[in-house]
Length: 188
Image (cartoon, rainbow, N blue to C red):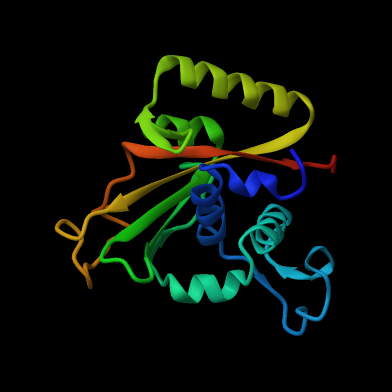
């Protein structure tokens, strides 16, 4: 694709929004005078790469996060192999749950897929294709992450709903698969 024409794909915006919101990484102070790829980041290497990706893709990521306030979070851990955060979405009367993590785990949590601008049931054929991509990218030595989301309805999760991460009083299954992102994972 020509540069930035990928942004015209219907699935691009939901994926970029998910990447932007499902992260704790931030640019260090006084880094905004530098080009995005040269900025120093508070966060691990993967989080730094995703933050820079989101900044280039969405722009003004920290401002975007401020406008879409985080209501709750389950941080990544090696047992779950995913991170979840829930956000109050600017100018909407609903919240958005976003998840990133090990692609196999994320895929397991999904029942639909956003493809071609539509949300469709996640079929076995979709899963086979996605798993083949995961294997291919992993075989190239890249670290692959999966991303998904779920709009939480106003009726079920009213404004000021108290999200309990220990009790998980919100759904983390039947999510909408958005896509994969691979990162170069240099040998240690």
